[in-house]
Image (cartoon, rainbow, N blue to C red; front, side, top):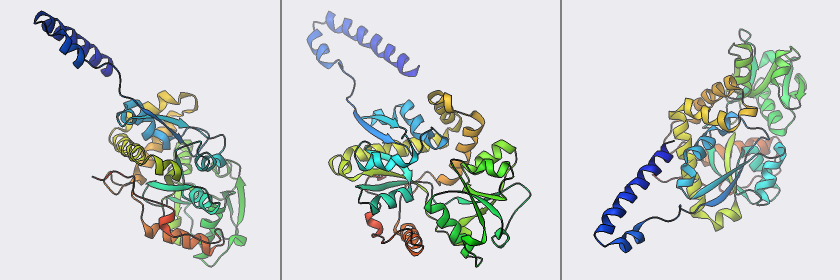
Length: 341
């Protein structure tokens, strides 16, 4: 609505100015000064971490609607992958220019020689842990013999291994129950005693579904590296050819994150308008509140990566045998494309 009103105002102003200039015999000069076309944009394909839209996407959904990417000369193409395993395939093969993904996906992709690299973080630390129902807190030692809902991936098992190790246990001391796509129903249906997940996904789902805040055992308090889980990544060949465009993408993304934090209701409304078919209003509203809690202060360091976090994570996954041989942290990430303010 604002853009339409502005355009009408500009049109009326130009018409009036033209009439005045014509009367003065200066029409040719006026014709040369009038704008003729909209600024050109370049398509940037941005693949997501999940096949179905979720609240993590709120900033760039809002930013696209607000025109933040277009202001940077970008026609942002937000793509959902067919499966969770396809995000890095899209990025590594150049079917996508940038990606919203996880830190472990980047590490595994680099191990396979894929030309991908992290270009910013989404969250300042690791908010993974173990959930139990409200009023039923649990300690690590009390997990012995218990059934625990997990996702059947290497990093989930690695984090759980480190947590159990802090109490002198191994995975053999618990009964793991793998979920195909969501660990929460396992807990709500009393099929497990506890379940794994992150505060702004599984934690949110438990709270919204049960109307009760679950108990949370943070993994970082029991030996798991405090490394951000989610990342922005880029195809290295695309980055090398389009450094200015990559910087523009990160400027617009940074602006989008800050605006979404400052205007949460507008942010969730924009997401609802775009993804109404897969949108649960109560869940996404709470998910964005929970996500804002882990994004950190909207300052110059909000998206900035660092050697310490990467070194701790690489040491942990190498020590557990998940990664055969780690590269140097600088080969996994760069801050080159972040806004310099």
